[in-house]
Image (cartoon, rainbow, N blue to C red):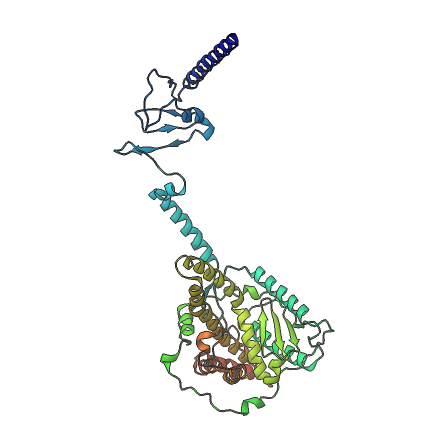
Length: 446
């Protein structure tokens, strides 16, 4: 037993001695690496570096080489041979300089380059998509292309036809024929107002039934003009007004001589659809798709009244209000995302709606009223009917004192007052008289 115990002790001592020899040899081999500048790191006396030894296990594993006396750190080639610069404070703490975007923005030259490139891109995009609205000459920024706008309108029109399948009046229905002929007058007036040789197809009806051709005039006797010929009430206080027509006149004077952008109206396939629904509404989608509901025809009996509504809706298409609305909503969304970082989202949404979206929508409605007034006058309909139409429309849809502030549309009373007093009414009457005398005025939009 004694011999066995001594043998075990001898074997244990031999193993410990062998492990020490092997570990010392591995340490010497790891510390004998060559620096990038050709000098060896092996040294008889280890030198301290911020509390670490060069031959420590961390440096051995990372394979890092330190050069003392220079403020530079050479990284392992496996890390891309990058260099990080640092400075040492009075406590011998090494502070490395930042890398990445923070370092770029601390460089004035980088900031200048970013500013110049960003400004160039912004100016190119902005002025490259800046257009002038017909008649008002208002400059507006529209980032949506004309082809995309037209495609969106056509897709919405197809979806609407599928949704109202079975409720669309056939082409031979009297209401369909009547609305189509009035719309035809408005489209021809638009062509005269643009004074351009447009390649437009004949106005068609969107029903799947057979198309009917009718060459008669859509004008009825102007009996509506002699009925209720009373003057529109024009007494109102300017200080209570948030919508006025001064911006129209100022824009026209400022941009006098500027040519309006009307290329989005080239080659339109105008179509009319009458839907049998008790909805007091009508609209014109981008691409020349006009939709009228029978509920509107039940309240507005005369051709002049219907021409006022259709002219207004076509005015939206002329001014590209749908595309402008998409662009504006994009900017509003970006602004909201920025404000979300500082203000509660509910407050941001409410303020954005009250002070940005709704005022913009009401202003577009006023602009469409003016364009539609000129269109109906050029088509041979008395523009003096328009103020009464909007006043009647306000009563049908339910006007309120807050509608001028909390609605997408101005109140009917306000729209009636603006059209009755605006200088555009004088122009509309001049165009109407020339049209009735057989001498139509061309180019009144340009």
